[in-house]
Amino acid sequence: MVQNKIKYIKMKKILLALLLLSASFVNAQTATEMANIFGAAYNDATASASIAANATSGASIVMNGHGTAIFTFTGTFTATFQVQISGDGSTFTNVTASNQLINMATGAYMASGNITAVGSYIINCAGVNTIRIISTAYTSGTAVITARGSKASNIVFVAGVPNVIISSGTLTTVSTVTTVTTLSQFAASAADADGTANPTTTAIRDFGHYYNSSTWDRMHGNWNTTTGDAGTKTSSFAGATQTNYDSRGARITVLCGTVSGTSPTLTAQLQTSPDGGTTWINEGPASVAVSATGNTVVFYVYPTNWSTSPSAGSITTGATAGVFLDATLPRTWRLNYTIGGTTPSFAITAVYVNYQM
Image 1: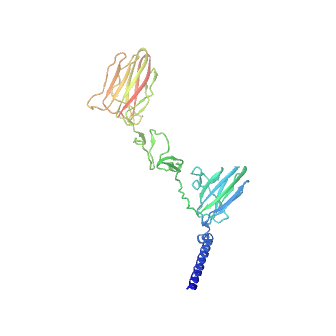
Image 2: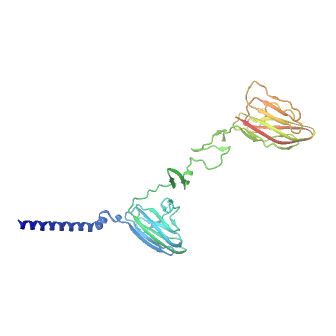
């Protein structure tokens, strides 16, 4: 009985020793065998180099399935370094696209594959055999480069998407919008103006316009302008051609300043053109003649009652001569001025136009 018990104890010791031996064997094999099972990409690949000359390559990594690579530059140098990639390990191509290399300090894409300052830079290496750094414009100093190829998931690059910084759910910064503004659907950046060319492609514009049979004009409300007829006048003349974009009528006011001469007179006649400025037709009566300093001529043009005949009011010294036209104001119009007397001189202070919708 005692002898059997001793044998049992010896067997337990032997089994325990075997278990301990197998456990240590598995642990010893794990680190070595994992790379064999999953490939070399299981471990990060590293390289380093110190570059102090032009056209010198270094920090070369055979990617062997790694998804990304990071290069860290330290030291003091004045030089330009280029990231190069190879699909076969012997023929290298410069990384020049603006959406491949990221400056980790700013989180922004580099404009090219050129690195000119210390810092860390990360790049997508999916499908790349070998990646390295080469100096292309060395001046002085030494750049110390540490490279690491990572088994981490690849960075997803989407061409043309601007770098965006989001803070607390609010879009705060868009650093690059060039590829958006080049879309043909967006009109070129410019101040809006009358006479805008008729678009020939799909366009996005948020300002209201009216088509005038050849171009587009901005929509107007009640708005004010002047005719450009101001100045000292000594003989009859035709005023500047005016354009009524979209108003039904207007109030046109001629302000006279100093008047001199013997028996000076000035009358104003509203004229309109049905053909855009070639043929001019008188609209309604001319104003009563003004002859003294401070006289004013006002045309009231607006459709209210078509049965009302146009009329011209009388004037006394310093008063206003009014012309009332119950009609719409056409697109092209002007005032025609007739000046009479001996050595007459009329200082027209301004001619105001108050367009009415």
